Image (spheres, rainbow, N blue to C red):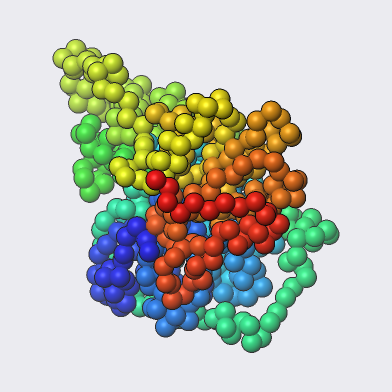
Length: 555
């Protein structure tokens, strides 16, 4: 079961050399993996890459025909740990999950992977969930790539660029023995387009072949003194190799005139928005022909000093388009200019807001503001002059009511919180911790039940500080998706070990509703390739929790 079936579209994954592939970004990524000879794939579902996992699940038969191992992992940490296969074997592997929360969950495995380095290409496809379409805390994947030294790709949001980034990512990983992150934003995942397909490739070494001829290298184990050698290897060998590959392969792109007094540096994923802003100012067309030089960072880490300084040569002003905060790219490029003794003036945050999504309006205002400072003569006359005719945008906050997310009509979770509200009327307010999922909506009106949410599966653990024999018991609410993702080990084992006197309410939908309707261990559905029909109550009793009450009719 999943939110959406891709059985029909999966047939297009069989297209061969020279044929035209048309579809969504997530389908293009899957096709690119097969064309690149991937040996194993895995991941954890969650917007904006839920559908990528659904595509892989629907394509399991094709993957098997090619000798590709597919795993729907229990969580992001389990997915990242899979990439250990690429440490000792020249096998290409890819995993995918939502970022940055998925990166946070997977951080232990990713840090070890990055330290040891890889032999086969290792690709982490991260669905960057930032901005107005996001449902999570507003953070970026970029700082993790920097701190762990994993190269970060951010391709232009069109299918040919995304497909090329997958291929380049594997090559870059192998050339520098370093895992690579491929960042695809919400719009990249669901953009529709076409590209010229290549033949699918069987992996040069399958995981079955590797099992028949096991190998290991103690120098890859992250323990002293090898871990100290890993750090030196990163700086002396892997980083220079990556920079040389990025520069020689031309992974970053330059558009527009070669000679101009100003230029714009943009993250690849923000390219479409930038072109649209320039088009509205009469300085570009819809095909990307631009009067303003643009340096597109399809690789946002590492940044290539020589490449950027060549672009800056002869320019007086450069605008950095970097969505989110802090301004890592702007700071690094400023450092390059300072060390080179350049007098180029850098613009970025200030014209752009420090935080928040760069929507069309934000992009247009910032680019227009930059051109007014750097080259007002390039702007049309009507833009140069103050626009007194522009109508004021009315404040509708007092007219249009706030519409927070809520339960669907008829949702079986609704009576659970109605009942809790009635209990609250009798016994007073309780300390209640929530968890990721639909039940989190209960913290909003009209129920207003639930407090902090500390991560998927961590609802009961979030109440640990209150579980000390107080006047009232702490209460936690968690779903079946969260239970199997991380809750069993991190929350319920924690409760059992510490002899908790709290109450945990587990809402069991029999599938993971929070991530798109995929099966979990306790699903009641028949699943040919996954183990279902494992009751949560049985798992709880298995770790020593004896007080378990099951209510099957929530109404």
